[in-house]
Each structure stands twice: as C-alpha cells, then as structure tokens.
Image 1 (cartoon, rainbow, N blue to C red):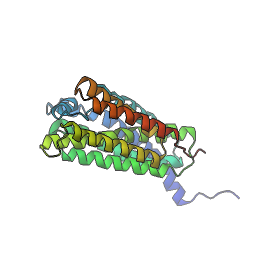
Image 2: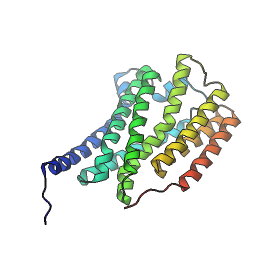
Image 3: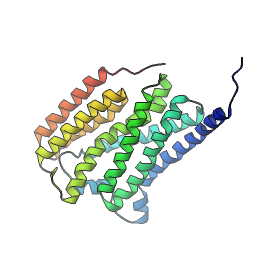
Image 4: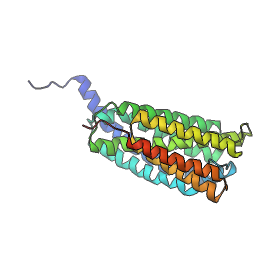
Length: 259
C-alpha cells in the first residue's frame, strides 16, 4: 500500500529547504560580522581585546585559524542541507546549528565594541548548550557517512571549539573585571585548564563524537605553545599536552551508531 503524505509530512519537508537557506545565510553572516565594527570605525579587533586580558589559558593567535575550517564547513553543510530537504539528521540538528551561527554573529560584533565581558560569556555559554544538546540528540540516530560529514561535523567542530572558548572567555572576563580568582596566577589558570580537560572528556563520552575532540586537541596544543613561547609556564604546557593524550586515547574508545 502506498504511503499517504499527510499534512505533517508536508510541513516537515517544507521546513527543511528553508532551514538550509537559513543556515547558509547565518553561515555567511558570522563570517562577515567581525568586520562590522571595523566598517563602523568602532572598537578593537577580537585579537586586540583578547590581548588586553592575556593569561596562561589564552592560546596563541594561530589557534584561531580553526575558524576558517568552521566557516567553510558551515557553508558546505548548508549547501548539503538545501539539497537534502527531507533528511532526518538535518531536522534534528539544524535548529541547534542555526542558534550557534546566530550567536557567533552577535558575539563577533559585541566583543570588538564592548570587550570580553560577562555578556560575551553568556552568549558563548548559550552557544555551547545548543551545540551539546544537538550532539546528544544526534547520537541517538543511525547516521550515514554523509550525514556525519555534512550534518554532525559542522556542529561538532564548532561545539568542540567553543567548549575551549567558554573556559577562556570565563577566565578573560575575570581578568577584565579584576575579580578573584585571578587567572593571571598560574595555579588558577592550571585549575581552569584541568577543569576544561575533564569537561571535554566527559562531553566526548556523552556525545560519542570523535569530531568534537578535534578542535579541543587543537586548542590544547596552542595553549601548550602559548605557555612555552609567551607565558613561560612549563607546568601549564605539560598539563595541556597530557590533556591532548587523554582526549586522543578517549576518542579511540568512542563508538557511534552507523546506519
């Protein structure tokens, strides 16, 4: 017997193309939003704002090149979403991904103008929550390789990076506000680094996403480099390297359901 298309089916499949175009629009918006303050002649660049609150947990500047990969995958994923309107994984993931792209756009305008503060921390925390809940929902599905590459990957990459960025934003906000504990003290930053590694390991197990671990390993590598080249804090560098090893070992034990 042929399956009858209900009104619910029509609404569901009708939303997915719109979702793809929305993801494309927001993906482009987050790329160009960081230039808005410069175009308006206000504020400082994100790199300059970050330098104002430098401390041992802030990675070296080249770490932020990962945004190029995230931006590229955002656009690739959006194009795939437009072409696969009725995909189940897409219907699960797209609201979470869209929230992150939107909040990245807001954050990229807010920080150059206002600096790294509690508002920026709040924005990135909401983004992290959206990303983790999206990955938790996706792990319940049996996913094809294409779904993993074009639906899971954009979400997992950005969620892994903002997991590290949330810790850095928190410590930088503490420095900017002149509050205690002061992350400029190496033992304080070390405590936050250990917390980040523990959090990353727990979320890696819960999300079952090896892709989620990739930007975290990248971030820890550049935190280690910062503490060799900039901060001269070997204990921080050593801990970051140990964290990389732990995450890589844990990633090898992760198993995801495959269609």
